[in-house]
Length: 235
Image (cartoon, rainbow, N blue to C red):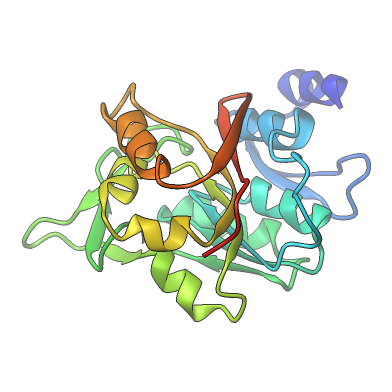
C-alpha cells in the first residue's frame, strides 16, 4: 500500500473522495488536501492498529478520538463480530465518520468528548487541523457538547470489559489518567493504543505512568502509539 499513499498525494483533487483500497471491501472517504491523508497513511497504509489482540475475538472496542473513523473501520475489518464505539466531538469529522462506518452495522458513532466526569465540553482550537482538536470544559454561557466517561461506556455494555481502547484525544488523556476513577476502567481493559500529547499539554505521560503503575501491562511502541497489553487477570 505504500505506493497508494504517493498516488493520493500527487493525483487527487481537493474535495471528499471515495478511495477504493486494495484488500478492503468498502471505500474509504477522505477530504483531500487535509490531515485526513496523514491519518489514512498511519491507519490504512502503515497499519498502526494491527497489533494482534491477545486471546480470542474482542467484544468491545472503544475508539476515543475517532477523527474521521479510519481506526474504527480498520478494527471492523479485523474484528467483524466486535462492537465498536467511535467517539468524536467535531461535527465535520463526525459527518465523515458516519460515511466511513455506514457499511459496518456494529460500529456506533457518538458525537461527544471523552472526559472523566459529566460535563459540557467545547473545542478550544477550532482552527487546528482536523485531527488535532482539543477539548476543555465549557465556561458559563458557552454552548458545547456532552462528555462521556469510559466507566459509563463500560457499564453500559454487557461485556463489562474493554477489550481494545484506542485513546488519541489530544491531551485529554491527562485528565482521564489523573482521575482516581480511572482504575475502574483500567482494571477492566485488555489492550490500549495510546498517543500521548505532552508537547501540547505537559503532564500527560506522568499522569498515565502513575495510573498504570497499579496495573500489569506490557508495553511497546509502534509509530506514535504506546501499546499496552494486560499481563495479569482482569478485575
